[in-house]
Amino acid sequence: MTIGAPWSIDEALAHLHRVDPALGVVIDRVGEYAAPHRDDPYAALLRTILFQQLAGAAASAIQRRFFALHPPDDQPPTPQQILELTDEQFRSAGLSRQKMGYMRDLALHVADGRLVFSELPSLPDDEVVKRITAVKGLGEWSAHMFLMFHFGRPDVLPVLDLGVRNGMRITYGLPAPPTPREALVIGAPWAPYRSVGSWYMWRATEPTAPDI
Image 1 (cartoon, rainbow, N blue to C red):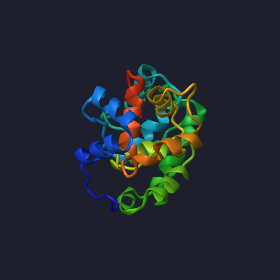
Image 2 (spheres, one colour):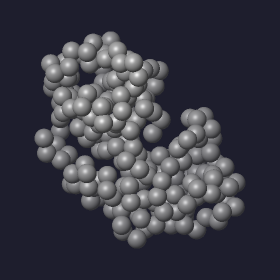
Image 3 (cartoon, one colour):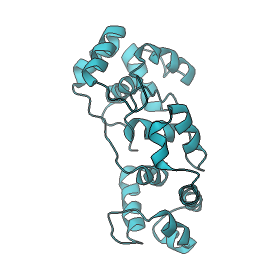
Image 4 (cartoon, rainbow, N blue to C red):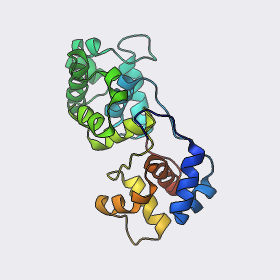
């Protein structure tokens, strides 16, 4: 499977049924694969920073106030606008000093050309992870969510995600969530469709996948 190449969900589900009958049971119970997709890479990463360690309703309220600093209210501030915001303006929207720093670092990476979104589709997953995690506040988990839900890469296994590991605990009747290393082993047979298997692990825990 080449980078950015189309892939078939029907082929993915057939493969996962074949290699992992326990996962097949989850697929049959949950039904259609319906992972979310985000179109704007900059907005997606900005949202990831904003929503970190916050409940969805609280994060959404802060996002509305943050976007309102630079109308239109349904669009995020541009990197240049973020770099021009004062600490007081960030605080008026409800953002912490730590998140101010993360957002400014993302804006700097975009503004000075260290993070060029048009280059990312042609890069392998590992290189995309490297470039995203160079931004303060964006770790491996954030990069994996970006690969899965922005680029639709089919073979990402976010083993740092507790929801995925809890889904494995439920699906395979484990006494506790597997460690990240153990989760890599469990998910290995799903390749080259580990993103799809991971999505069904979130569904196994219901009611929701992570708010990314």
